Image (cartoon, rainbow, N blue to C red):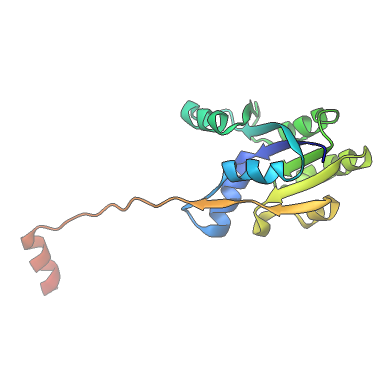
Length: 165
């Protein structure tokens, strides 16, 4: 088994998980690292993030084992392309953790250069064209966070007024 490199479009996958599975759903980024290791010795895992990401969230990615790469743009699409191309000599297998159709051409380029391409994404939010280019597809691991509920209590007189109405 060869070397693998993971490039994660974290805003794309976070939004995809919430849109597909509900507000409490989040990508399991540690689980994604385990999945990536199935495709070869993981040489590097990069989490692409938007510039406004709070420092404590970036630190969570770092503690999980990711190198944090800021987009320096409105979104991470251009940075995703740049990081995937930069991965050219670093690994045999490139794991693209995105569902974005903007990555199809760079995936084709890397595949033509002899790399194995794995797409890891939320199934309901991945481009069909990206799946067709990939040598393998892996479903993004998902975890769920409990939502905090705000409960307002009504004092006795308010309850009585509501019951009478």
